[in-house]
Image 1 (spheres, rainbow, N blue to C red):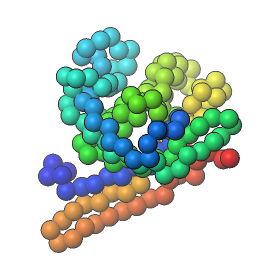
Image 2 (spheres, helix red, strand yellow):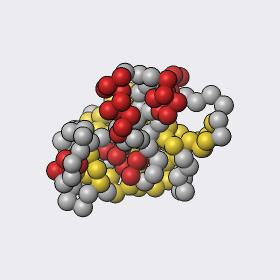
Image 3 (tube, rainbow, N blue to C red):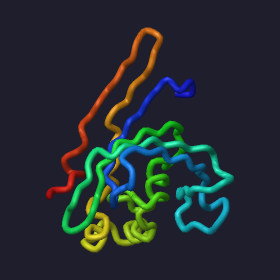
Length: 159
């Protein structure tokens, strides 16, 4: 991984419809607590003083569900920062469905306090984030090794 001989491709379901079908998010990331108060220590944010972070994104499907717009995306992190995909997508206004921290961090705090509730289900739709590692490839001199797994049925929206 340090030699950048791996490729990870993820699939995710996000809120809204991005304006472009393919795009790259190039925005540095920093732990939020380093520059402002954060009730969740792990939270990251886009910040000019952060580490370089690049994510390639492609819209696979635009979905209408219960009067709301969602997009099914393929995302490829070029760099490998903590929470990179989650932060980048939230930063551009398309948080991952079910993400308790980057969709609305109060959801995470309420979840820690009260557990999974019907109110959280209404807001988040799923008890976990709809982010799935769909393909992992290792590039060796002798050839590539690759594994793939389909997007979980339990994270799909029914129309």
